[in-house]
Image 1 (cartoon, rainbow, N blue to C red):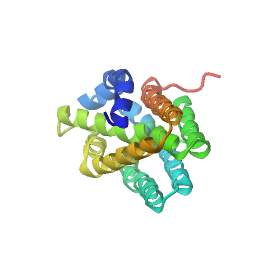
Image 2 (tube, protein in one colour):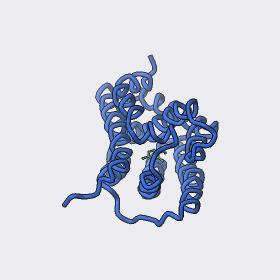
Image 3 (spheres, helix red, strand yellow):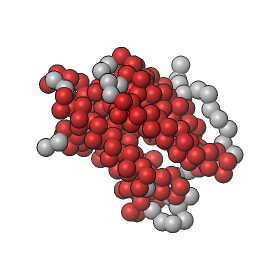
Image 4 (cartoon, rainbow, N blue to C red):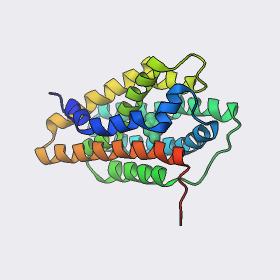
Length: 216
Ligand SMILES: Cc1ncc(CN)c(N)n1
């Protein structure tokens, strides 16, 4: 079994919870309240900037030019492709940019930045992998069910689309390569990092859904 297949087995219960979550279910049905989606997009814009930074940290710390190029391209795509998606919704719904991260966004971005800066590149790669893989799986899952009139169609099409699919396949390959070279304890850290980021994906959607502001 590939290392990444094992990673997915580990998070299957988390992924099932993500699919069952009200945010994803209502996004899929097209009846997610617009205010909830807007809150998510505002937070996601803050998230994406740090996600791209985390990928650039992995590029800077990569041992080979190929890995460096790969992480640089991922960072570029996060800014160019996903930001275009955000800009579409910012313009469509006249969304104002947000500057304050909600708790999950704060936790997730800081976790990614710290892990990609301070842990090995292999562990950092495992930490960013859910940002690719879970979105592709959720995108494809929703794509099969969503109607053409779904207001969140551009979001669904981006994550279910071929370009995103290709980058996820590349990210999976690079993670499996790192795992092959890693010691057993390093692989354990990779599994922990992958699981933690997967949990934070759930929390990210949950914060937008619950409008979960800081209580104190
Ligand atoms: C929170 C989150 N995670 C992942 C993705 C997809 N890169 C995203 N846009 N936002």
